[in-house]
Length: 405
Ligand code: PMT
Image (tube, rainbow, N blue to C red; front, side, top):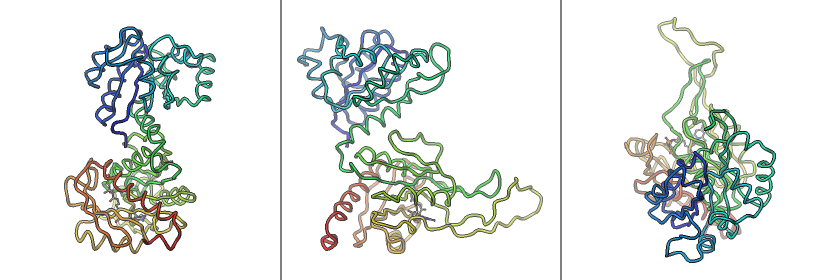
């Protein structure tokens, strides 16, 4: 979805500038064209060569000495940009932008562009909390600028407070979200579940499973990147929460059920990638169970079938983790749970299913159409599932008689 898009990445004079090299590298790896524009102060913290090395493109540091291939640089950059990001954005540059000052190529580009603009502030806590900076940020926000961060933590001054450049992954997520604003899932609300539920036994122990949440997170990010409003109901704490996604943390199947039923009340699509426990302990001990008896018997009771309980005019996509007879068992689950689509994992394969970065699934729809996907990153699997969701949504919008055509 983002391949071939143009990003102008502005760097201003902050110690956090080195972190932008990673942002530039990750954007380039995803197939985006990244034009880095540095203020003079930024070049004191990190060299233009670092950015040139990771983007394989000229880096612009001076309005008067621009590379020959660009004409009227700030105008061509501004027009070409699908998104402009300034990370880190200093209090000084923020103030200039709020006042409409265009004294360097970066501020000129921002003033000239019609693309979405993202600012990731990074500065000393005192500068950030100063009412002048706060007013400037509020003004820019009211004009449609997207402000990512800052975060709280250790600052270069030695103080601890607000002003740290927000995590680069969050900046990347915000960029992809901005680029997705014209995607094919705009105006759609998609609820995704992720991770393995944890069923408490006592104060410290639980019954869990090997789901890492990677598949569900990939789905949430892919849906966000296509413009959807995304709610992620997750039992996972190890993965960074995707930027631009509403994250609802849960632990047990019962908590997931409550969160999913609430989130889907007005949603268009539910994708259950979570590995929900089928049984949970009948009783949860209030204290830690002591290691006294030779054996210990736990009574387990069935958990509610969450996806089966979701009602209303909603597209339902389920997953099935199977070790044999994949198509037969997947089809059975699709029918039993009244799903629109099911993605069946072969959990005996080492490179797919639980806790891997890649997956190989079989997609089965209501009409019995079976599609075997090859091995690919979970993010790509997510997009192929969403391609099907887009078709299902368009069918759902047509009259009931047309739906089956
Ligand atoms: O998280 P990862 O490490 O990336 O791994 C991904 C995955 C292998 C967990 C994922 O791709 C997957 O297969 N998830 C579903 C696993 C599973 O629980 O399958 P199931 O056959 O038990 O359940 C079928 C469907 O019903 C699932 O969509 C499940 O979320 C849903 N379900 C199950 C039980 C229950 N009580 N309520 C449910 O809604």
